[in-house]
Image: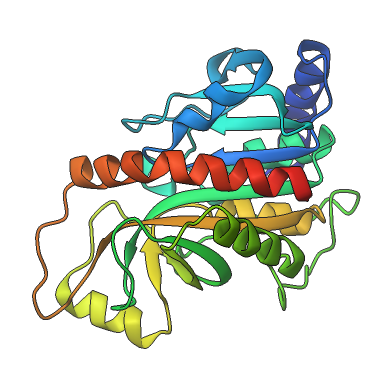
Length: 277
């Protein structure tokens, strides 16, 4: 059973620390996935706070996740960028993985842009496609909202009939077209526990579930953001496309490389979207 009083105290300690450490109050929080940490470099008036300096913050242990909270301005908006995230496969619970989003929501952020690198399940996708998430399937076997509810943080049973903000999705799609980004799509993201990657049979099953891309992150953050009443935009960079009848070895280095190649395009898309949201 979650000790809700301990969790509340830990969250509030982190919120109080950040309010004292940041000159600005973030409007938008951006969570960056595998191979996608470079957006933070484009912020003006940066303040960089290592996760290890923030009380009770979980630490990212995955290669390519820098582990910094970077605050600043982009396209005239005040951002807090999570440069690296926590995953359940690292040993964290969903509650712990979503801890940074809860803290930043209470610190004032009202919009969440959640990014990740994923494996494509839709055969029409190509590596480097940016999928605007329109729905998701949670196969983690955990939920960060389990346990006693803190009513002032959000409702006991949050509505997820429209987890992703349609207006933000439309803005992102329009910005992609204006920027000439041709590898843009919409679809459903499915989250699995990991860290083992999918077998051919599992890939077939995930396709049958109606998923267009698969990953091992993001859903705990999205659920907490929804619970906190934030507007949410999900962007998934498809690093490879899985053909269950001819499944090739999937290597982390290849995922990081493809995500890194797509990152400049994603940065432009986020900057343009932020300017209009």
